[in-house]
Length: 117
Image (cartoon, rainbow, N blue to C red):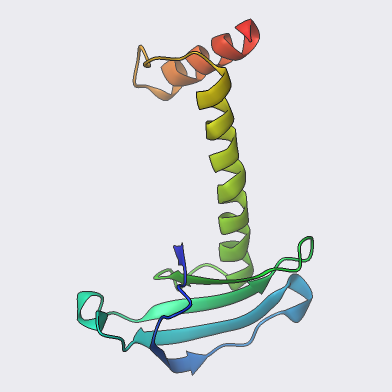
């Protein structure tokens, strides 16, 4: 999933119904038609979303046709919270490298660093 660039050239293949109450403005199946369209020849899903808190309009492109459009918008919104969390970890916790690679090892090391902080 990614945000659509303003200068993206595409053709709408199919339009899907959306729930305006959830902030969705569009749900379309598109085909890229720009100069680099040969690099990505498959159909994509284009989802328009207006954030109620900020009023900003976002357009997402994804190849996931199974999830609901509102779920994809929620995933993208949560993604930024995760980015901010990892940015805080990098800035405030002095973790040079992880001692283990398992989920439990990483979680234990982060929890220990938070307790020391």
